[in-house]
Structures are given as structure tokens and as C-alpha cells.
Length: 275
Image (cartoon, rainbow, N blue to C red; front, side, top):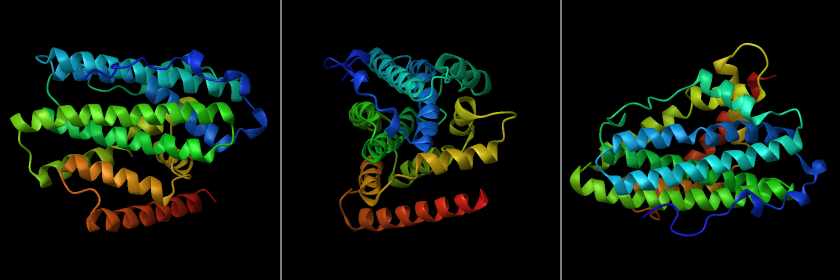
């Protein structure tokens, strides 16, 4: 079940020579800079998972492999951002980010209340990143970024399947009903508006003092602007599957429409606040 069950792509596989500066969208660039820092910080998450699953060496190895691939995502995005903006210093921005935002790496118990809950939360995260990079790959006309995002989106889908497989194993030991799983999902979704993404956006793009509200708004406007209904359909189906609900039934169709409409409403409100 290791994340490295096949040869993984490297930075040398990216067609860097095809970079087209005229096709760089400044708003997408800002989102990519922030994403590079979050991905590049995955070593902390790998360490946290190894501590939580201290008695499961198989999963620990999978977590280390997963973290290594995620860190590579950060370096690929950071290198592209440097091409698009030669003034961007990935390592300096990453240090700024980690100095201002840390996760409870040393924790030996899941912040989700159980290890099954932890794996459900990981499925939610991989769902979000898969949809994010898919939407960017489809939105950008810059060939190198498109190639990077397609590779990362494929990785994130594979990572979802990895965590889902372990989730099923742990649910057999630590049963969680549908509502308990829904609470984990909602909790993780609420965290998407916490300081991690906002501070990453600030560290990558900010000037002056950190303003959480402003950075949450600015990040959301850039990260979610390119979502389309089919991205939401896929994401909702993946989350419902992790919750234990049929992903292609009427509930999925209704939720997809509601989520997309809410996202569009929120983006309009956030945009109005910037005027």
C-alpha cells in the first residue's frame, strides 16, 4: 500500500523549457506560490502521522512516501513560481511560513479523536487538493504549470485511494457511524478557513503585518475562482465515498449543486469586500 508502488515522476520530467511567461496569470501565480509552501511543509504532516500510527510500521512507511511526494509537489510549484516571478524565493518564503504556522507534530493521538477519523480527514484533504490542481490545470494556458498540475492532481487522487484503503482497515477496528464521519468531514472543511492557508498566502505574497481576514479572503478568491460544476461533482462524490454514502445517488447530485452555488455566492461576497 506504499505511495511508491510505482516509479514516481521527478522534477526532470517537467518540460521546463516550454515555459511561456506571457501566459502567466498573476492571480493563479499567487495561488501557486501559497500552495508551494503548504505542499513543501508536508514533512511535518508525515511526522505527525507516524507519531499517531506509531504501532503500524506499514502505514508509517506509506506516510513517509506520501510526504516525500508532497514535498516534491512544493518544489515543483516553487520552481515554476520562480520562473514566473524571479523575485520569489521559495526557501525564504517557506521559512517565513513555518515560523508563523506549525501543526502539533509531537502529538501521539489524532486530533480527530480516532485514527479512523484521521484517515477520513486525510481523504478530505486529498479530495480538495485533487480538485484544486485539476481546476488549475484546466484554467491555465501556461504549458509548464499545466503539466505540473496534471501530475500533482493524479498524485492526489492516488493518495486519496491510499488513505481510503487504510481508512477501511481502521474502521474495522474503530467503527464510526455515518454521522460521526460527517462530523470529521465538517471539522476538516471548517479548518480550511484557519491560519494554514491564510498564513501560507501571506508568507508567499504578503507585505507588512499578517492580516488573517484579508489573507483568507485573498487566498479564497484566487484558489477557488476556477472551480466548475464538474470539479465539485467529483469532489462531492469522493467525500461521500469516504463518509460511507453512495457517491452517485440523488444526495450527491443535490449536494454538488448546493456546494457549487454556495462557492459562487461566497466568491461574489469576498470580491465585493475588496472593492
